[in-house]
Image (tube, rainbow over the protein chains, first blue to last red):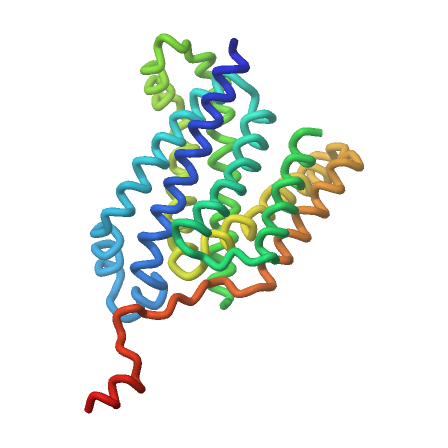
Length: 127
Length: 141
């Protein structure tokens, strides 16, 4: 039964993390390069600009949900299961989210890179 | 990509890895959280390792957000996966851990993936939708 709880937790964590990543990426894209913005407008303006985005707060809420489900998952399963399972699945869900919601150019090169990294992480942490 | 941008990606790698390790260490102290008492997860916030993990993850978040301000999500995530390789190599050369053939293949795959994505453009350029086409605009003048 604990294995089932763990996988429900991993699924919930992966979906929350992907939603959080997509929303935060959307918020940061709207702002533009923070380094350039800081040079032209100053540090305080960067903080105000970052905190004024609604998508960012949505992203933080989803990230917090992912964080607490990760904590609960770590109390049920080892990092050696939680780490690779959540990392490998998050790579794929993020690539799908970026393609369909952020309209990023996820070309063949990026899909192959995602597949390489995903299988590499699985091999590295499951052995 | 400038040196500053590569340093931001390095900060994402370092703070992400240390944050996860500190959290895992802290949750070993806290113990199992019962499914019927999920609110006990908040007691973990009093553990110093968990707190250290949270501070590391805050640093990770700020560098991650900075990275996403100049690069695509599908660039940042695979590019920062080099952290898994660094941790394995640190374990091998510093802690003298054994790395099996399967792990070496994993390291090679991640390095190839990071190399592939880092060699491409970091940002998808979206044409601004609100600007009028200059040729059509001239026709109306």
